[in-house]
Length: 289
Ligand code: PMP
Image (tube, rainbow, N blue to C red):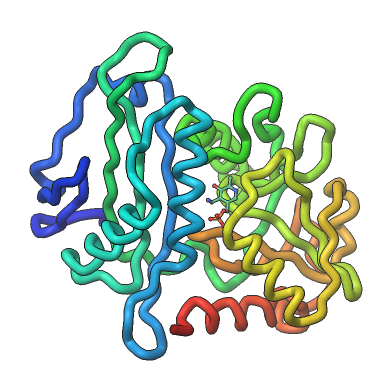
């Protein structure tokens, strides 16, 4: 699914075949989970070009994440954006998912390594969630405490939390987990931000216990353009049960409808919610030149 015999990847300034790429078993990132990465989407525009959605913002966040984890990433945003476009061209990709990953060298200690590696690959990736609507369950796992990690950095090790929450949700028969913060307020899903609508107001969790998504900020812009009232505020699962509708946002998730939380279905049909209108506008926006 991710690569075949012809796939080309980027590694430390070089273009190589994915099938020939190698990495070592002694890398610090592999043992201790301190890699940093991004998930980025590219879309074929209505005019037939390829556009990487919010390319600069993603590479700026990669730089931020690296800095937070004491990793040296000696490349400019411009350089990395150019490499991402070259990667798509070399692999004849347009509608694609791009994955940059920064990982450290061989080191069994916990100190930073002088040399880091930048790996970038891309593949064709369709819709992450089905159109039918996601059934969410409040997770038994909480989001990592901001006092014990850099929550706003996209660190590989943080995703063990997402893996636990998602798999526990699936085992219970749900599609996705909704994770709370340390004080019992809703934070986000395992790999996406959460929004819900009540009447004329859209609510989402504030920064502090979430990865503040780039898609989340596009939704903020679209709400402003539509004149929708958006509130970043703390809330509990009980506040969501009588919502009119809800949705998830993320690079992979795009804008995906949520049908229910903890087995309780939302009041309105998806098509009658602000979320649906935002989804339509978002899908147009990502393909606009
Ligand atoms: N929260 C988490 C935990 C995520 O992994 C993601 C995906 N990167 C998001 C939110 C959404 O972020 P973005 O819109 O930048 O993809």
